[in-house]
Image 1: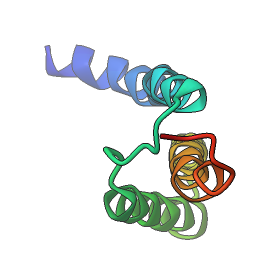
Image 2: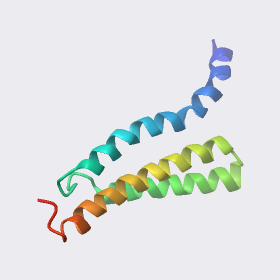
Image 3: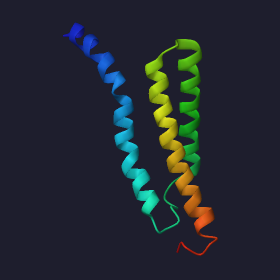
Image 4: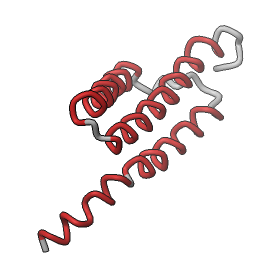
Length: 101
């Protein structure tokens, strides 16, 4: 059973980027079509999570030389930047133009 787990684990690990994309898409879609200021999105929390993925990307690229980890970290960085960017846009830029309640 342990050998089976070890043989499947690299495939599960490699599929994390796809799973991450599937998780980010609905959140980003909701933020993109939102008419409110996205006050429920904690920018501090998302920035902390973003920094952990940036460090993971650097560690994966420079220390482990693990392309799968780099791919997963890159997808997560892109997803985090999408959420953070849309939240900032809705809070600080749309509001100034009078488009957000």
